[in-house]
Amino acid sequence: MDTKNYHEIWSNCLRIIKDNVPSISYRTWFEPIVPLKLDEDVLTIQVPSPFFYEYLEEQYIDILRKTLRKELGENAKLEYSVVMENSIYSNNKPFTVKFPTNYNAELKNKPVNVPINTEEKSIKNPFIIPGIKKLHVDPRLNPDNNFANFVEGECNRLARSAGGAVGDNPGGTAFNPLFLYGDSGLGKTHLSQAIGIKVKEQFPEKTVLYVNANKFQTQFVESVRNNNKNDFLHFYQMIDVLIIDDVHEFAGKEKTQDIFFHIFNHLHQSGKQLILTSDKAPVEIQGMEQRLLSRFKWGLSADLQAPDYETRIAILKQKIYHDGIDMSDEVIEYIASHITSNIRELEGALISLLAQSTLNKKEINLDLARLMIDRLVKNSKKEISVDYIQKVVCDYFNLAPDLLQSKTRKREIVQARQIAMYFSKSLTKSSLASIGALIGGKDHATVLHACKTVNNLMDTDKRFKSQIESIEKKLKV
Image 1 (cartoon, rainbow, N blue to C red):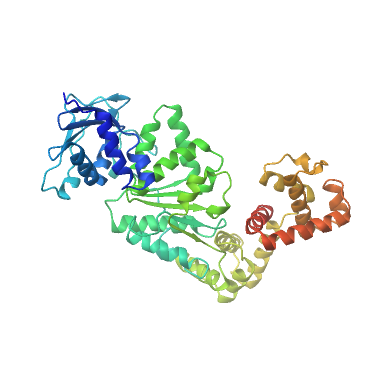
Image 2: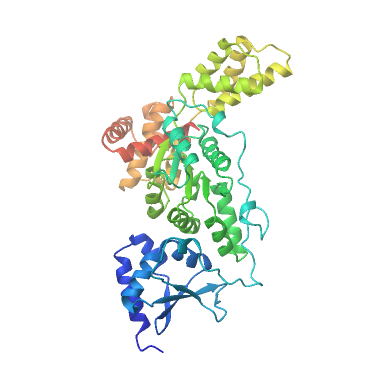
């Protein structure tokens, strides 16, 4: 047995490594390592998993070789003990890594095979059944959501261009993660899946997976309940292109955020591609850990906006051509002029018009379009009351509704009350006096002051303006 202290040897190595790798990488890949023993020039270290061992060999073999040679000399060797199912599984034959003088990149591509425990369960695929292999993972992509069916316009040009670049070179662009955000119905899901489809067409060997954030959350809860959280983690860590839709739904779910943080780190550091969609920009998402929000900003955040008139026309014409519908330009222009909020409503209007024509055996003309659009617009307009506004504002700021009626002068309560007054004045027909009476028993002068305060803050405080815009969207849903 060598008289050298293996803890001291490894600590010396870590000091050098820490100065030469990013701090995040150091914490992720080196802090969990435990030195076990030193026999002559062979240092044995314990790593948490087979993947961990392979990743070290793939990414950090150079620096491990240099630091160990500095401490132990030219004949330095490294052995691994890998933790398998809560036990160290070395089979009395640890994995030995020799550092030859003529070391080259080939060593990284030929890692030592990890011994397999024949009684160990395969990694579970949460989408299908346990034991399914990587190449058999269903990407869960709708084939209709491809780039050919995605209409490009000023409203989505940046997102569309970035998506095309990612599809051509997943994990190899600066757009990682690619964070797509915008209101519901503007094409985020379509575009994210189009990227996945393009990757599968050009790189069939890559594993692509689309999953909604709510589905991810459900699977995670199931994995915890069934005591196979590690299988869940390892399954997602092997994906080459991971698409998470509606990632804002992770807000407030701390354990889900924590597991996704580790999956994100692993995939990003492994050069894998992440595509995230949300109804808000990262800076506007509340209830999300700062460490995740900062990672969402690492790549490119691209917004999808409501389509302009020309884009709406193009979307309708493409849909009509695809479905083989005969419709005049006059009708198309009428629909595009009156349905302006999002693409989903445009397509819904087209389907309703076609249904009316088929069921009533009427020609699709301008009169039928007017009748149908009038019904759609009328049905979509709901009466907004002062009480409803107070509820939405309190929900947004996580306040009890009765607090707006209290006499407290706490800043957050006063501001929420002012915001409720501001929206009550702009979105209802109620008088200033009735608004004040309903919100805290105030007079009309207080309501006027509140509206002026809100307008001034919107002009000077970008964060406050963003909050007002978010609340307004909720009120108009």
